Length: 436
Image (cartoon, rainbow, N blue to C red; front, side, top):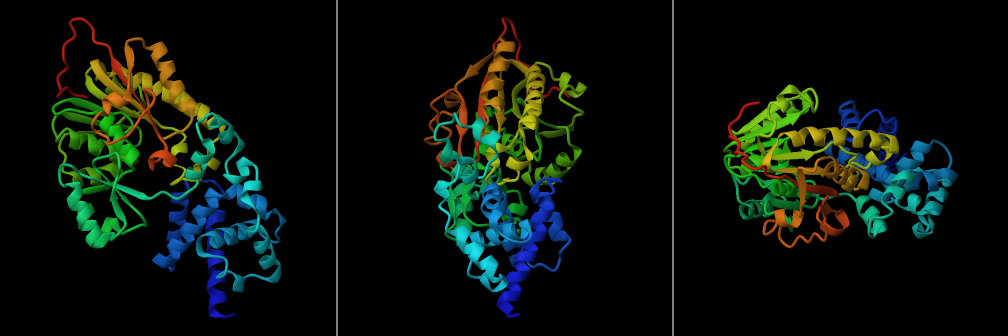
């Protein structure tokens, strides 16, 4: 076999094996793929890049590829691998590794007019998700944007760096001609490609962090002030926590709650790099933990970036559309209601509660806020446009909520609502340094 044919055959086998592991749905695709790479240490960086690009293309287009591949011969995962590599690397390089039947099949499916396919197949989504977002404006355009790979957003640490300086340094060497300021977040930079940021000194000293622009805007909605008590109720890996702490100029007290010790452990190196001294990571058993109850009506600001379906992040996590279901979304909605109600108890009179998801589903967004307000008349909805006034460029929000979409704003899909606890007569201002 000629060298070109050998390489093409090896590529098909590698992608077939990797995607076969992921399609067992034993865990998130990025974690399964990372484990697969660890089990195949002889693959170089370029090899891993080619395999990863093809695998993620397959996950984005899984339903369409399965549909058009039905008439093929042999292993279904081999046909998926061929389609993924043809889309990302070009079909010509694969031809030496294909037999005549496979070549004819690939030529035939490549000529299919995608516009002739049903919406669910064309955009490669499950029926339930298509139905759930049918009422969104220009939902076809939204689905098309969610099915494209996302750029890489980073943000500066305003305690350590200025955006113009970081932009200049990126353009000078790390990411020439690929770096642009984000249009809405004053802290963000958008990169095309995948430069090796983690080995850059600016990453190592905490001057920059990887964070989608939409996530950065959530911190601006919270708008914490110096000396306040603030709670990031579902801190996760801590990206928003770090920006909140920097906006507070490392004053007051910022609690980072999460139910996962592992996530908080991954947060600690980032916290150390940030230079912040006002962050208190706290592992809680659940949303009704006693340490949460001790902060009742004490916090000036509470952010609830709730566990959700992640449907707004399909550009980065395309496997989520195959791993979620109406049943799992229903379970998440119940958890969101419980978390939001518990977090609301921590908000002081006159204090702000921000509820957010990275979902595009109304059941997790508007429906949750409306249900909460009906059950908690002590809170009122504030327009998100007012909370962001003068802080997010020319971002326009026609309704009361922050609703971000990749096809309109270039961010992941995000939703956020700003709620305020009405002031009670004679209420006193809480002390910023109260304990948990």
